[in-house]
Image 1 (cartoon, rainbow, N blue to C red):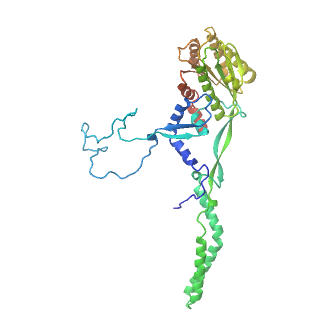
Image 2 (spheres, rainbow, N blue to C red; image 1 turned 90 degrees about the horizontal axis):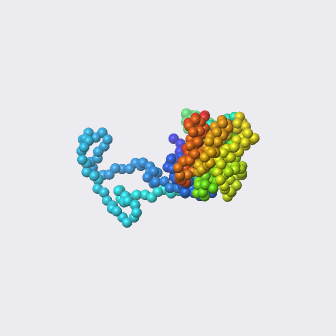
Image 3 (spheres, helix red, strand yellow; image 1 turned 120 degrees about the vertical axis):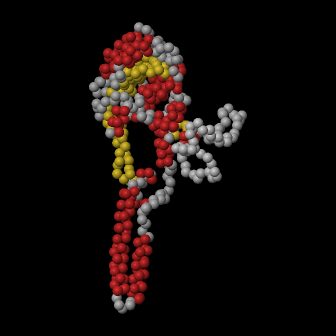
Length: 429
């Protein structure tokens, strides 16, 4: 058995491998902590790292240890000495109620939560894990680019987890053959001469001693060649290559009318910031069209969409009409995957809501891959929600979701863009 000892100097990121292993092992607990933390952030603070905590009991690992000594009575599974209903004495307990706000531990001791920081990239990876644009069709090959990791040969440096033992041993054997080939051939010749001298009847002590000394020197020289050296090591190299998929555009429609108070607008902005980060993090070159509306709709840039103070009455159909016009002018449905996300508090003129349903059914949904409507309100649903529910009942690519508070934003977002089983299988292939 060969033992490999990595004696290279530790680099700046010497704990990277252990950190990634920790994040993979406790991924579910960390994702729950990230989900709880995202609702506590400010509107403009979604692109930095995060300090999260997970219960210490969730990271405990089984250990082997010697059992307690002495004579004890324990019920083991399958023990035939006890039957159901037998009374067994409880083990002695200690501790009591202190002056703190929590309850006393029933075991007499405990541990605080394990707190650690994750970087911006780790935070976003966990935030958007298993998410994808629904119904994305591969109709073009020049816009949206995803990446896949693939094996790209070997390299002379890397992390121990990527060490290729077989390849490294092949290099070690080749090096030792190259360095000791002549010495081994000379050693065989000297050993043959020594064997002949031993079989000779005339005792040549001096010649034999000289040969033995030369053989010992050669063996010592050969043994000084290390079994494996640093430049024998070969590490698996991984690289990323783009996978052309599709041309896609996301329409973001936000209600900025007077009925949308500042708290409601902040929640809508949180949702759209999550959506923007998800698109830019997961895909390349996705077009994003921003539309703000009150009684009139207007296409704006990212800065104006998130920070403009303009307000007014409410006519939701104005945004849908503008979206329809933009699609006809710039985004042909046969060449583009068209998506839309609309956020509103549901307040609309009663006469306008049926018109919204008609525009969606006849014009937008036939050319749209996925349309998500998010209603942000803690009041009773009004006419717009009822009309949109009728659309949702007969169209699979239209979804209505309700957000009451900041804590609902991320769960609703994940539900809207959860990767389907078909997308997971196609990604694996």
